[in-house]
Length: 482
Image (cartoon, rainbow, N blue to C red; front, side, top):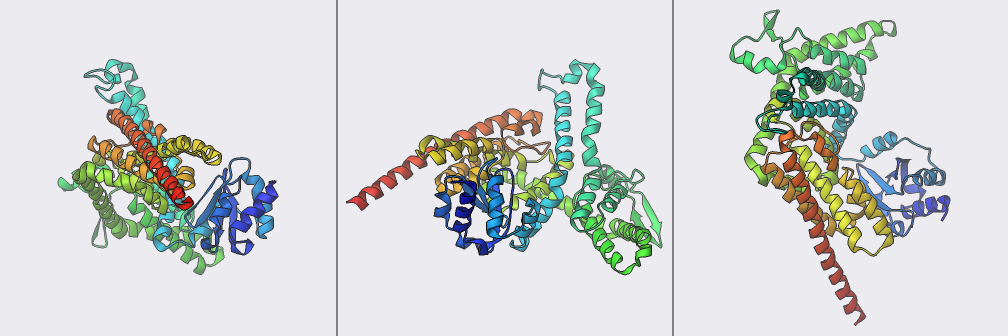
């Protein structure tokens, strides 16, 4: 088949051009928004040699074609479908409109936090590097690298400053991204974030001690006492404040004359939002954020390895719904408040789930005789081990069912193990084999053992289930022949 024939075959299999609402492509996948996914002829799609797998997520039906092929198929596809070429973000937004309110909320959080992940990852990894330099007993008994080499003490101090910056000024990053997502001026959002961490305010990390000593500074305004407390390392207060800022700005632009718009709109938006932030929104959302974090820590400490095993079991099903995108906000809060939480327990569990999906897919590679399936399994299995699971999970494991079962069992066992040993991450990153650089130094060995458990259990269970599935198929064929 040439590329135009492949495009026509795909179009026929998904219900014709009348069923296509939007289309774009990424590096390897054709990303479609369909009016009715029930019209898709999955068997016809699977029969196309160029199609390496399909899956549906976040309102999009995605067809895996491979790098270098997808862009060549996409060009005739949009012509045949009679639609305009679109970007992946446009298709993503079109797909989101088909989702329920809960998934739309998840997408909202994803849109806000995904752009700032690189800054958080950099800060977290630098924090991990600082921990390597300062942790005792890691490389030598009773000493840290700094104790053994005092000359690098200032280097560690400098790295620590670099590491903390992203979390100390986290409201600036979130304010920029969230205000932009809510439809407001991103730079006003950044300015609001700066106000919330202004050095004239009591540092948020010192707030608890100041409360005990009754030394919280206040503004005395019109008979009210307003606490002069910053919001370093917080998430919920700046999210709420950014939403209010964007809505106030949008409303003001509708009523203020254009001649005064650039003068009055920013002034009133920041002034009103700032007052609301320090009087009502900030204190309330700070309390809510603390309760949320305390609840997660309590749940983690109370349920122990059983809770970890259950989360490991259900993590992949959560990924299927797309709700795992909201975990970025939760992990950001856990890592920014690392003094209390010790880091994120979600990242290591996600890594266990991802490598389990990869191991299950590689088990399929070993047992299957289908050349097309082998090709897809080899590439997607390695990809999953490195932290990218969609091709493996949707292209193979869910289709065959038994590899998915093997993967979630492996993930559950490994997650219970790492939870028992309190493995936590100090940074976000690739949740898979490379994730080792995000783990607290004292937990690295347990993390590596956990990955080994996840891979071995998922591989063995999948292999056993594959043999059982093969015997059932053979038996069924023999009965039909008889």
